[in-house]
Length: 155
Image (cartoon, rainbow, N blue to C red; front, side, top):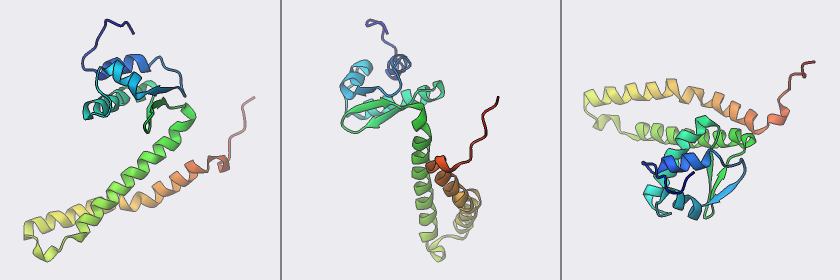
């Protein structure tokens, strides 16, 4: 990237640089902050890196935070474990939301809100909770991928 060319918003500068970075390379927070022209450890910095990642991921690049160091350009072989990590986080948030909805004392809720809450519980159960065992099975398979039978090579 040319030094005197600055793109706005700032995250676009990081996208331009990171597209050229090699897989497995680590880039310090100092380096990235200079590219973004934002101070490290600010919410603007974190938001800019996150937004850059949204653009980089479909391009085949992903930045993974290495605490107190910087970001690593994720190696393609690590995408599955990174995906599993994020699915696990999402699963915990869904479970938390379901728990909150079931923690409500229905007798204290107005009739119209009570029905909305019951409908929500049913919707969440049908969309997510019933599928958790399937997601868990897939995640287990992903973690133990060496046990998945492989197709023979084509000749």
